[in-house]
Image (cartoon, rainbow, N blue to C red; front, side, top):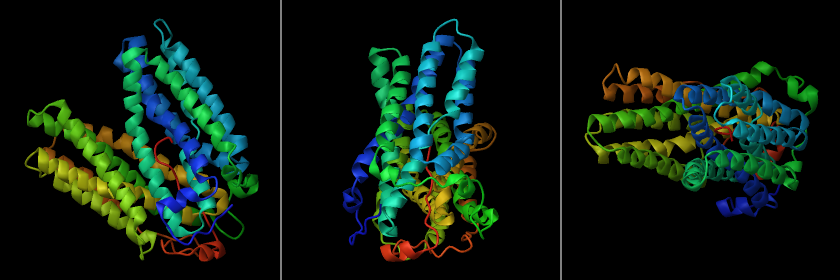
Length: 430
C-alpha cells in the first residue's frame, strides 16, 4: 500500500490514503503512555503510603516494559499487528484495570509488584509499529522523513499533555481513574489501529524470516548496521534525562523557585519540537548516517555550554538549543534503523532504538544523581553533554546487500528497487 507523491510535505504525508485515520488511532493508544506513569505513581503512593514501595513497583513496571520491548516487537514482526498487537494491548489494558483495583489500602506489596511487572511486560509497541506502517505507506524517503518528524513531535506533545490530563483528573477524582483511562485509551486506540487498511498492509514475516537472518545475509550484519542508531539513541536518552536533575540543581544553587525548572524543561521540549519539524522539512542532500553524528554532537555541545550559563535566561537559551538537535537525532536514528534491516525486522529494529532511549534515560537519571552531589554543576553538564558527543564518534555501517543510501532525496521509484526497505523504532514505550 504505497502512494507515490511528487511534492514531499507534511500535508502530503497526511493526504496519503488511510494515513490520518491510522495515525490518529495510534496517537490515541500512545496517549496511554503519557497518562499511565503519573496516574499509577499517585495511586500507589496514596494506597500504600510509602514512596519506597511505589518507587519499587514503578521500577518493575518500567523495567519489564523497556527491556522486553524487542521481544514484543518480534511477535508483531512474526505474526502481524492484528494477531500480536491487539491481544497484547487487551491483556495490558486488563492488567492495568486489575492494578487499579489493587491500589487500595491493605493490598499486599507483592501483589502490586507482580501485577505491575506483568502489565509492563505486555506493553504494546504502538510507536515502532506505527513507524513500520509509515515506511510501508511512504516509499519516498523525503516523505518518510517528514512522517517520522511529525510522528516524533506528536509523541513529544503526548508526553506533555498526558500528565496535564492526569492533573485535571486528580483535581476532581481519584488517580485510579487515570489508570483506568490509560487502559481504555490503549485498548480503543489499538483496536482502531489494527483494523485500519494501512496497518493490514504490514505482512507477517513468519517464524523463518523473523527469528533469523534472511537467506544470504548474516544476523551480524543487522547488528552492525543498527549499532550507530542504537548507541546514539541511548546517549541522547542519557543526556536528556540528565537535564531534569541538573536544572533542579541549578535552580537550587541560585535560590530560584520550582516554577523556574518547569520553564527550562518546557524550553527543551519546545526546542525539540521545532527542531523536529525543521529537520523534517529540509531536503537533505547528505545521507542519514552522515547527519546522525552531527545531531548527536549538537546535543552534547549545547548541554556542555548550558553548564556555563551565568543566569536563567542564558540557561533557557542553551537548553532550547540542545532541544533543537534532540528530535532530529532520534528521527534520524529511526530512519537509519529503517534502512538497516530487512522488512521482517522492521518493528523490532524500531523497538531496539526505543529501548535504547528509555534505558538511557533511566541510566542518565541514576548516574547524574550521584555526580551532582560530588562534582561542580558545570562539570555535570559537561559530562552529560560528553555522552551524546561521544556517541557521534560511533561509526555507521550499512547492512550488506542493502542498496539504500539513506539520503532524504531518494525518489519513490529508487526506494522501490532498493533491496531492503525497513522501519525504525519508537521512543518511549509508545
